Length: 275
Image 1 (cartoon, rainbow, N blue to C red):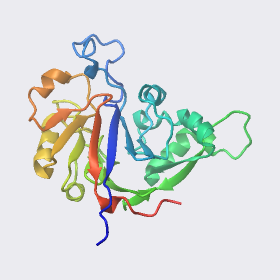
Image 2 (image 1 turned 45 degrees about the vertical axis):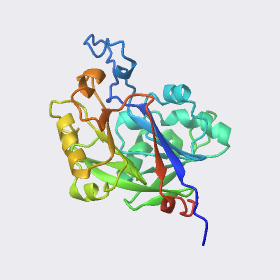
Image 3 (image 1 turned 90 degrees about the vertical axis):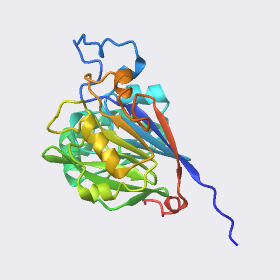
């Protein structure tokens, strides 16, 4: 009888749990923006996924430099992009120190439309003329919605609606991270079965054309039935402590610095690495 392999731990760190302008908002003096609870201070939305030596970023926000220093990110194997809005891509230039340390380009993954926006926004990265200035070094990979491996860690993209646009969430074994969604369509819901941990967008209580509300995300939790759920991409309408008092025990608000661990099933450990 073959010996059973040892399961690996997958760890997700919330680098930012806020909305596109962050919390506190510049010039705002509401009770959340002036709160002394550190959980009410929210950088722009991003997470860091680690599994053994594998280090993956989901989105590079305008706060990425601060996030990398705060949480001690020293290596990046890949960057996954949910979509191309400013609060999710504008930190891309700050990967240059990682290029220096790692002595090579960093793979980035996104939809065709997301990568087209990145090429337009960061046109200088793709320029063919020699430059005296340093610039990010990247390898571009187009996601099609099919699962793909990063050094043996399988990732399943999950396509959601973001107003009239689209965004991708990502599932790693029993954990899924979805942000910036106004609707999670039936095909995506089917990809979220059997989760230990689910992250969902929950901007505020009041309806929004491109984001989920707390009530809408609670309904998704009821449908999908993860063991634990965390709400993210939170604006200054939601005070952390007061909001959590109204949530079911297995549903919490994410906060910057939150760390969540799950055991990765064996079948997610043995895919061939990306070339």
